Image 1 (tube, rainbow, N blue to C red):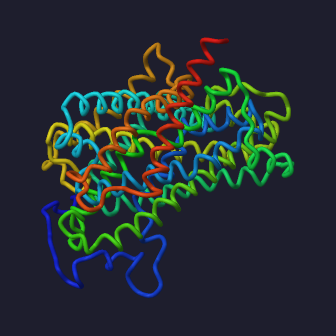
Image 2 (cartoon, helix red, strand yellow):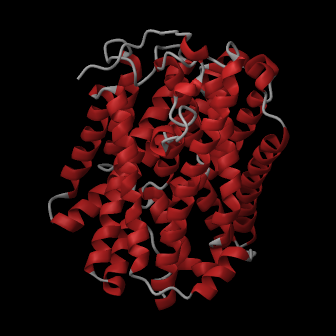
Image 3 (cartoon, rainbow, N blue to C red):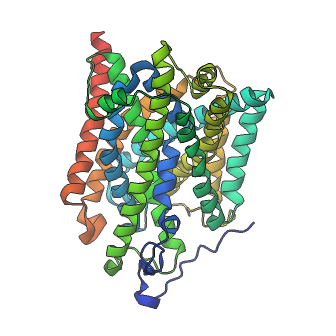
Length: 444
């Protein structure tokens, strides 16, 4: 299947602004139409690595750690909105703006950290999907690892862009499985409310490592790069969108769409995470099972507690979320490397138009697959991937905040006010949680 022509099509009909988008067009906005980069970004946040992290959090600390999800929601929403504004305003992703306005060593360091974290994450996610598929079917694990990896790359490279985005949107439905699993669990709602609304901190290394892992899962570098690049991609594809630095009259509608898309997507992601924590806290933690190393182990541990149906639902959710997350991880890597190298980038381009870009998509996925056939155990790396993302996020977020406040980059649309304050608070929180983890490790 051929992709849409990537050539820029500029139109001035109806003022040339985003009133053509469902969020602002007509008297009854269609929510599914506006939900795009933000929804896909939020849903991909709950990948098998995230499922393993949330499962471990619920099993190890019970409801007492669920407040972290409530605390993280405004932080992750602000950071993702800033990244989306960056892409929509400039027509470039984060890497493209770093390339044009900052020293090369900053760009290369950020892209290198992102590529390493994403590759490990891809391997961990494919491994988790393979383990769960083997558990459900009995077929060899390596066949599923290869199958899922090839499937993700093939769809990403050869499927028409608009159809591929639609597939990603519908793949988010897999996350509803975790709400279904929670239905099978008897939850002491009083205990949950206390843990969710009353922050409690345990001053030890294990607690801070878990907080860093949870924050690293919810606020991950690949999510910033993906959403900013997708906003830039949509701007290039859709004829009625223009870079806001050149078409400031589009800003009002553009920012309204971005805000709705992002806040709904992040809320969806956080509610799924809460559902997983509730499920494992009310079952595994309550029964004394406190050590969960992977999403597969979480599913296996839940089977005798909640029954085969809930076990199957939980397991299939892992595969569904992996099919969404792996392309986002590989795609964000390709966007970052491609923009840094000044290649033609974009899923809206035909493969022959952006050979190097699609080669990175394929290679990133291939390297993730290969990790599953080395002494490195990518399944055990699930939790540590979240830790790595939490640490890598700090320099990425700090750099992104500086870019978003730079008039040379953003023109009159520099990020200011409450959004900027919350963005810096999120950066500081990530830095403090990583520092607390390291300090706790030294003291223990």
